[in-house]
Image (cartoon, rainbow, N blue to C red; front, side, top):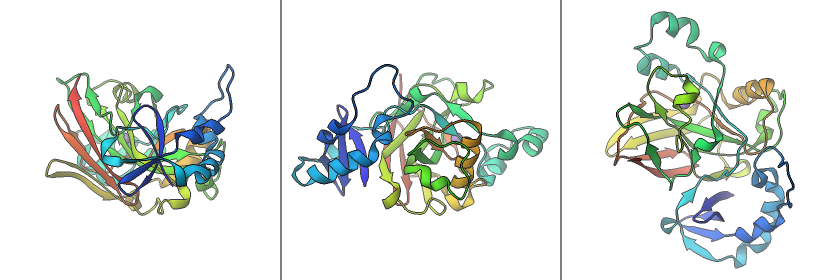
Length: 285
Ligand code: MN
């Protein structure tokens, strides 16, 4: 199932160029009391929501996909986990300006570990990226994004994919500069997730997906997830060994070679095999 959130927090099922508005299925979500449980309520209750969707989809109203504003398919992740330097060509080609010592002794994910981005940086394709510091270089990073489906703690690589709700395209936007990584990547709108969530049962094998990002006619990034230094199961296992993963947590898996700057007026066309294509506009704030 391809699940999207659109316009005024509507819930939709994507079928080709059409969206079935199944917002009524959200009525199965439990009534919450303070304090809220950790994680995203929709993803935590995805099985019940999907069962309700199956009941109502046939009579649900439809809208044209081209006419809606796509929001992040996950509204309330407890955290965004990100993998640095997870494609060797990205290290070799994009990070050549780093000191040799850094490149060879620290610049491996086994030493670097993972990092976190602010959950409030998350937006959908239709919201676009807002540049707060146009005098600095602002880079695109396309990444396969994994949405965690159930609470995961110390899971093995063999079992890791059982904890996945689905997959989407991720953009890990970055302000270049000397500050700490999470600081430069946590600005509002600097994580884009979309165009929708493709649930695990309908998603292709995450270990062999072509991903591509273009700006205008310029193909900037063109790679395959089979080049990941740490594949998806290893990333989930590693993350869950250090902290509990909750339903709706977003794991972005690292960017391949070809990161580059975007400026006001650019549109990033992002595609991943089987997960869709999204156009993301860049504007100065
Ligand atoms: Mn990244």
